[in-house]
Image (tube, rainbow, N blue to C red; front, side, top):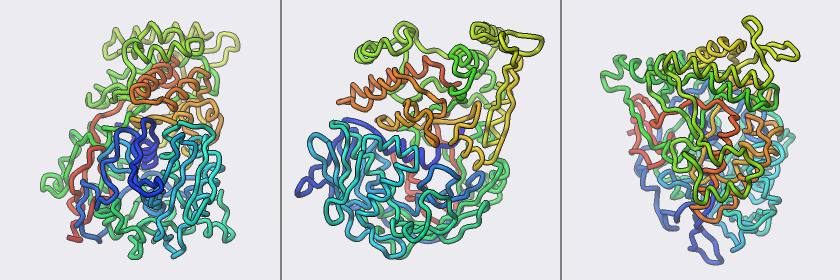
Length: 604
């Protein structure tokens, strides 16, 4: 099993990348319709639609989908609270990605942009027809408002836009974003993924920083139709959507309505899927994928199953148990290393996971950016430049995770863990591992938001108890979990990072020192390390693809050497099942384009 990657994570993984950037030079005055961080944009300025869509897809019908936990806000700006699923149907960005390219973007709210040679700023020009669902035009003032509020109130955006110092109206329908550095080729694309919200809606006495269940207006193809807090939310396709004929939208946004049904338990949700309560399912349990689809609808062809690599082809996944390094004793590397030795992946994979997974041995697992062996070539040169800031073993010791799976190997790993704990100042007294000086027992809580994850965590807890460590599992609802994660109120959590093939400024949000104590950041481990910061800078300012790959491998190698997390596992196939009430035109190279390119068979 694994945690599914959130929509936000997919957007980040696909949108925030790095050099080398290629900007399509096709407009008067330097205006461009597309950009790509790897290679050149595939589609010219006069393209009619993405190749992977059905331009004649019928409109209508309803997609019913599931979500877990609950929600308490329709406002995407503040970091707090649990946002309703599907808000991306309502709000739009300046640019939008193509899923048959690694990192290309095309105009959406913006009809074009231009960048000077030194990349000291970028100017976006809005499409003259862009409108919110209440009929108000999307203005340059809305863009400036959105940038300033998101940067102020949301830690993720504050980190992504840390080098974007200002946004100002510089012409009719034009906004210029200025940077505090030159040569950072990722920044124009980061700005292109800015979520644009209606300034006038918030100006009407509504608090920008507050959660709300009031139906907020957006410029996207759907509007919020019905809200049942804690139960469901329904979006309705807009007949008056301004952008329905844009090339990036032809053949997409086909469902007449999209409804998200909320479930507190994934097992209950799966039973609802079996019963036809909703249409689409992402399978995260290998055992159920192998044995749990023998119900009549599958046999009769009403439910289809596909295991596809497409969504993972351009994404490196690190899924891990993450100790909070801000707290003792997790701030001691020896303790963190001991926790890694106590996790017997091979036994868990065999007994609990049907041997369906591979060990997550890199923060860019499954990609050519993953480090391996000993550093050499340009990677070694980059590490040499920060030698005094990184662990010395990165130069002479390859990162290898302990291997279990047999009684002898498991015993040896626990003995190694015991020795590391002893070196860190712990000792065994009776059945407990305690601090040798204070006598305080080594105990901590593993916080989860999904009870099904316990099947993996329980064997780990049992191994920890063999060491005398008392680890307790606590499962809370999604909203409470997210609030605690936002405030770093945990000992250990289960999380994942979805990494782009062109990493860049988002790395500051994941493990940069400035984000370590910034509520709402994705620096879950609490990493604050000058060597890591220096290597992130190397990644951000790589001036060609070879240097980017080398710098990313160096960063990966040093992150692993610090033992900040307990690596888990992932699958290289994305497993989906869906009823014959919906269908798709085939999958793009790097995604599913779900639900945008899919449609209802009832509308055919």
